[in-house]
Length: 247
Ligand SMILES: Nc1ncnc2c1ncn2[C@@H]1O[C@H](COP(=O)(O)OP(=O)(O)OP(=O)(O)O)[C@@H](O)[C@H]1O
Ligand SMILES: [Mg+2]
Image (cartoon, rainbow, N blue to C red; front, side):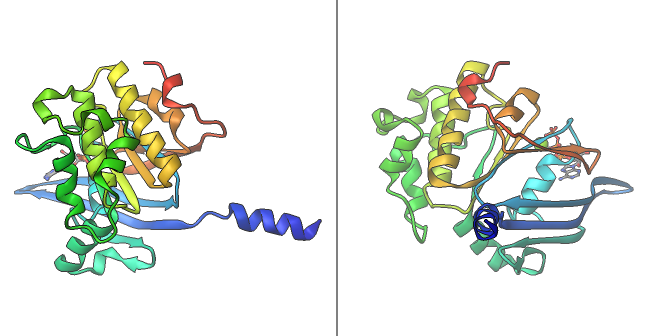
């Protein structure tokens, strides 16, 4: 009995791939200082889907950008798989972003003169352990549209190409900043279904910023930010699939 309990505990023990400690960020704007992060402690666990919620200006993008190595903090540390990113050189950070981080933003930033498949291939050509671009497009449901140019695709389809591009390098973490911000709810749900599928099938740890409280129901955990602080962390004992979300 004891032994099986132990096994169960070991099997469910969560591994933190990111450890954020005492993170602050002060933007200097001439005379005015903006305190975007005021001491954030947070872990991200392997394979989980986390939603970051909070009002405009609460520090969500600042936090995600620092985790993704796009920006550095004013103080505090971010550790990725035991490596302190805050001590990394610019070159090491570039390497970190290139190998380990997939980004998805509100605007898709596809190259207009390249097809969906070519937009994905740009990344796989320089990645160390890439997926086949066709497989990345298949997981987001775009196999049929791989030879289309961005102008021939809807906003939701373009965002799914952007997701395929982000996952095609097999990143350890996928960071999404308002990926449905420019989409209507029906299209947004299709995009969220693609993210959910990536998370479930590839096991990619995913952090998803949104203003939309309803989206929180698809997360394993929901982290609320308020004025540069984490105000609440909730665990969803039962998460909904994106198809069950309504807003
Ligand atoms: N590059 C910058 N220079 C100066 N101030 C900045 C910069 N980036 C963000 N800020 C400020 O830092 C604070 C946090 O911004 P951040 O973009 O992280 O918020 P957010 O939660 O992502 O908001 P939103 O939901 O509107 O995207 C805001 O007051 C913002 O004006
Ligand atoms: Mg933001």
